[in-house]
Amino acid sequence: MFLNTNAIFSLTKGYLFAITTYTNKLMKRYSLFIILFLLLISACGLFKRHYTVEYDKVPMTRGVNTCQELEDTVVLYAVFVDVAIYNPWTEFDIAQTMDSIKYATKWIEEKAKKMNKVLVIKPVFHEQGTKDSFDEKRARVTLRLNGLLAKSNYSYRRMGPWADAVAKYAGRGIKYRSSSKVGKRLKIHNVQTLNQALRDKLELDDVAIMFFVNGYYENHPSYSFFTQYAGTKKAEYSIVTDKNPAVIAHEFLHLFGAVDLYPHNSFPNFNFKEIKENYDNEIMLVQHRDIEDLMISPITSYFIGWQDTLDKANTRLLLHKKLLPVY
Image 1 (cartoon, one colour):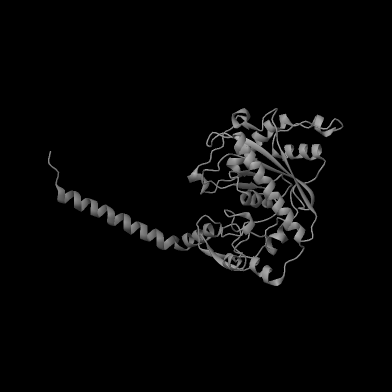
Image 2 (tube, one colour):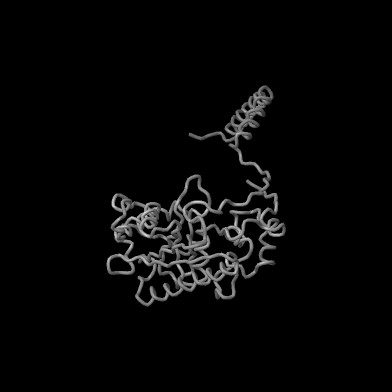
């Protein structure tokens, strides 16, 4: 059986013409309704649209959550955890990191003294039985962090369960005061309850929990969580991958309200260019240097509560209004 190609072409062309004509008639008849419908769903956000928004708010980090005031006596509670992606902790590595922690806290105390603030930071090192570290496997979790993920938005949703499980296991090693009523009935199941137990045990309000993993030879960043107001009070904590005193001090200051002063998307109203020009050795701007070459600027002093106000020049750096495109 042979097909007549000319006949098929003519028939197809006729169908297409009929469909096009019918569609045009429908468009003319219902064009107003179609336009109104498109405007409606666009207004509802179903279509992404370009517009601009103005950012002019200073982040709420002063005196929020559990690490409220960086003055008087506070505790840096260090927990050393062996994780599969890094080498396990050795006695030498832990000793070096302990020295770095003491160096970092001493540096912060000296800066506080210059601001006429009385500050004593007590480093407390967690012990699990007779050991200074424990394997994450005992907490039945695995920290999943690599170079690719480290450059992405690796948020609390991924790291939070790890920290809570590690905190729960670490809670088994806490020895309470004999007079403590809270400690005897408190069940530790996450970072929040670990913080509560430590405050009861140490009889101090401000306890900063920092989990240390032995990633010194990797190019992975450290992280701090719940450093801003989250609606309810949460226990701040850090996951530290480095033993550089400047990195430790940087993350510790985060827990008491300090914010990053290098360019990032969280605070687009910050004038990062001028901040760098004015404070190029600020510890919240750079951290992979000798800590003795760094300083705490008036901006960071404000966020950690060492001063109540900022002058107009520094306020302008934080309230620099900028219109940004949003898609």
